[in-house]
Length: 267
Ligand code: SF4
Image (cartoon, rainbow, N blue to C red; front, side):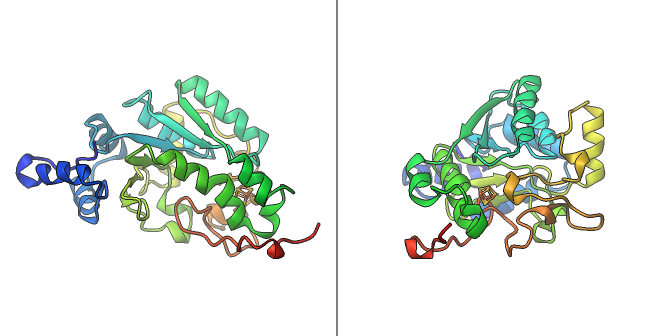
């Protein structure tokens, strides 16, 4: 249950009634309350308090098994070892990412749920497997946004590993935020972590690194849309390089081109 109130006197009964009336699970007021309540506490404390007490209701981790994913996964499984870990199995990942996913799952005992694109959607909109090359927003919609939307229908909240330092567009990322207009909550425990914090955590807990990180990939997504990053660039600047696109659509809305087949290129 998505009750974030701290005592019956501050509205718990109202919140219970909201759920019965199918009102949004969380509201702006809940987000403000959570951000204020846990301000100044470190990530492990907040995860233990929030997840341990079940404040967010049914919750899943969304993980790309990218360069820094091991930190959030390790933090959370200390408190909730069975929490589902949703992985968007787009069909376009580097083989190294899939191997890393499997290795981390075995090491941490993760409850992985692989989310694959709808076969009919793929056949109708990406039969060439090349949609990424002319409509990356549309490709992300089929391979990431829709499968996650479908899976998240059964949850009240998600945990993400996003950090503010990753790009100019993620600066000021809050710990708690609403997930679009769904009424679900997003919990970003590492929002204010620095690169040094992450490195220290990897060392302290002897966590394995993604094999591509040392090859110049500080941010790792699907292989066609991930390139190496030069010194001084944003860590995420290698994602969709050359496109006016910084997010896949699961965190920020994107704009696929229309469904009219006339929009499709001829190969
Ligand atoms: S990141 Fe690239 S390949 Fe992956 S779903 Fe998005 S556009 Fe497609």
